[in-house]
Image (cartoon, rainbow, N blue to C red):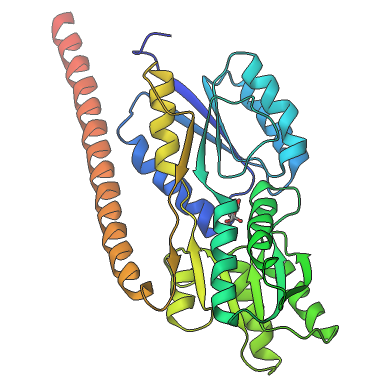
Length: 329
Ligand code: FRU
């Protein structure tokens, strides 16, 4: 391929419904403004691994130059990703991992570390003594496995801290509400909820609040801005802390550009995380709002530019028609 041609990037997303994925797409679109010769095609697997395999096959049929994939579950998605990679198409794995090394590059935060940091935070809140319930992400998806394992590594060192229950909320709000309600129906005694994302944390908070069982500590993960985001829930005192889980959208596009333009790149790109609690939630909110504002301006400028280009093109075709007509006279 010469660099003059348009590159087609296929993105197989495990799901597109939630704000975290929307924020990832927004980051990607803003970054793509710098690469006018890139076309991005996004397929939504709707939390379904079978669907995701079909999506990737379809992207192959559409002759993509590079695949970005966020695997719904690691094991079922691994063979198809290996197939793509072995056929010579570069593969960037983002956020969730596959169960093999057959990919060109990875971008995402370290979920094991996030689990450990959540564990440290839980120990601190509980003063080394107490009972914990955990609501995990989708079993079989790598962040759920790694967040759990990292958390356990820390709390298992404290004999007076006990994990009394762990169930999957499948990353979503409504399943997590059911799980939390079940915990209460079982009359489980607990002091803290470790939720694998902020939607789960919100669900846990609402069930606990509605059942008048007194305050419990709640930890989440993601740290998004916005009314439904974790930062707001920390500020509102609904949850005690959340851990920033950057989407990597911009980084994935930058990586794709380097790979397609045959420039050097890092194979493993680990994004930073940070704890968000009462000490920094407000300042982070202000900073993120400023960034959000700037992003909005970049998007506005992009659409102004696109309109001008479209106008220029139509004026140019009009002029050509006039010239052709004049020449004919
Ligand atoms: C978004 C999400 C996040 C979570 C991530 C894990 O779809 O559920 O809330 O941190 O996926 O892959």
